[in-house]
Structures are given as structure tokens and as C-alpha cells.
Length: 454
Image (cartoon, rainbow, N blue to C red; front, side):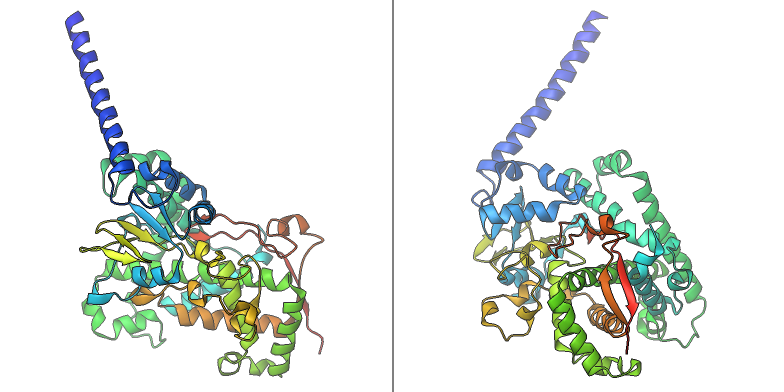
């Protein structure tokens, strides 16, 4: 019996020793012999995924990465095998069309990881628009003036996706450790949100597939009336519909909420917008795309709001293909992970003058103060072959909805009844940092609307 206990102790000691030796070997290799060893960054990030993973699941990775770029420069080693860039040229090399036609593939961590009613109008409208576009029927959010199960699940499903990505940074993809950490760490409610969203997508899609003769030209109409219906399985169609809804609803609502905040906290901008919109649109019937698309200052305010408050501010990692790549003057070997974090890039003084200020004039090309700005550093819908397919729809939505608001109402932040809620944003127009769980979070923003007097 004594011999047995000693043998067991020896086995345990051997296992512990081997694990410790492996960890020490990895640390020494990553710090002193890794292909990215010469790239600046915190030493702890060069040997461990833990700092990046922790900041990701806390919703602070964008703020953390900005601090790293401010300290170390335009290229930072944010984890053992990952580089972060902020130069617009790097964005084109990573996400755009590359010489030889070889695209950089998405990182495996992305695969399969997808109060009062008055403050939610933009969100509900965006949901109903996407419901009509995908399934030829709205979700009923505006009519109910309340959250539906759809809107709640989609708004929060990004939390589950963020946890999945954070865990995969530490465990790898498709491993037993990923399964164990997911069961132990992912909040049960976040997992439930994802399940509800996929179930709702399945139910809506199956019902729409059963009615192929409907004439309404929604996304499903085009899928069912061309050759793609023979190329996509029912499961693939369901997953694409789930993606369309999550990508096209909360993101648009986030952009509109950010725009509303900036306009209401910058009186000079608000007055100029009012003059432009109400001067060009003489009646409600004039609020049409062929007229609104020519309102340059309105367009500039939307571009500036998207720069400061991008709906999708998180890094979209890519894997360097065989043969490696030269990115922003740095050779990166094959297999390494690279990304341009959108929020960090648009908040860098390397790319924009006064990067934290809301200055729509920078998009008009009239003020020499902004002559050194790099507008292509702000691409909220991405670039290259994987640019957001809903880009044009989103811009149209935002410009038409904002024009309707400005034409019909006088707007102001509610600093009486809901002052404490709005202070979370910043009443002085200096936007407070928000949490990011893949999508930008948006606390309740309370706005007083009064019917415009004519």
C-alpha cells in the first residue's frame, strides 16, 4: 500500500514537472525565438493569450489596444502570434484583394461564433426593416412598442460570441478544453440567447421556405428564384438568415443611437443640420432617397458618428497565408494572425486630427485643418471581398431615418427626468468609453422630441 501511494505521488509529480517544463519552454520560445519576437508590445502579451482574452470578455479590448498602440506605435504584438495594425494601408493588405488573388482567411476563433420602450425606437425600426427584408414580414417591434423575443436574443447574442472567442484564444478551436471552458465559464443566459436566436431563425426560415410563391422581393425571394436554391441546404439558408438579422439590426440601431447622441450634444452641428434638412425638404413627401442623398452635411454627420461610434469596433482577425505577407513594412510569416481594430484606428491621431472630437466638417473636404486626415481609416462596413453586403441598405436607412427625425421633430437630450441615465454617455458631447462585445453596447439614451412648428 505504501509503495502504491509513492508510485501515485511519483506519477503526479512527473505530470506536474512535464506541464511546468512545457510552459517554461513555450515562454522562452515565444519571448526569444518566435518569428514575431522583434515586434514591440508588452512582454506578457508576447508569451500568453490571457491579457487579450481577459480584456475581450470584459468588453474593454478596444480601449486596451488603443493604449498599447499609443505606447508602442502603429504595429503591436498583442498576443504570441498576433499583430495589431492601425495604418489604413495595412487594412487593404489584410482585408482587401491581394496580389495573386489569395485572400486572408478568417481566424478559427470566429467560426461558428456568432428598460422603457421609449428609448428603443431606432432598434425596433431596424428590426422591423430587416424582418421585412429577410422574411417579407416585420417582427412587430414598432407595433408592440416593446422588445420581442427576437430583438432581445439578437441584441445579446454577441455576448455569447465574445465569450466563445475569448475561450478559443486560450483553448484552441474544437478542443476538449474549449468544451470544458465553455460549460464552466460562458454565462448560462448568454448561451440561451444564442439558442433562442437560432431557433427563431429556423422557425421563420422554414415558414418562408414553405411559401416560395410569395411575390414580396425579400432576400428569400431572390434565393428561391435563382440557381442558389440548388446550391444551399436548408441549414445553410437558416444560418445565413440568422446572420443577416444579427448583422443588420442591432448594428444599424447602434449607429443611429450614436448619431443622435452626437447631434444633440453639439448645438452648432444640430442647427446646421436643421437648416440643411428643412431648407431642402419642403414637405414630408420630399423625404425620399433621390433628395436625401444630396444632403452633404447630413451625410458628413453620419460618417463622423460612424467613425467615433462604429457598430462593429472589434478586431476581425485574419490568418496570413502560405508565403507570408508584408504588411505596413513588416514581413509577417505564414500562419500568424493579423488585424486592424476599427475603433483603435479611427481614434488614432496618426489617422485623424483631434480624433476624439465630433467634427463633421472633416468629411466635406473644405477645411485645410483636416487635409492630413486619412478617411480610409474609417471603414465601418469593412473593405475588400468581404465588405458588408448590407452597406448600401444601412446608409440608406440611416440617412432616411435621420432626415425624418430632423424634419418632423425638434430634438434634445432629456437632462431632467433621465439626466442620470444620459450622463453615462456624457452630457458634454465627450463620449464616454462603452463596452464592446463584438458589437458596441449602447445604454439607454433619452431624447425629448417635440413636433416641429411650421
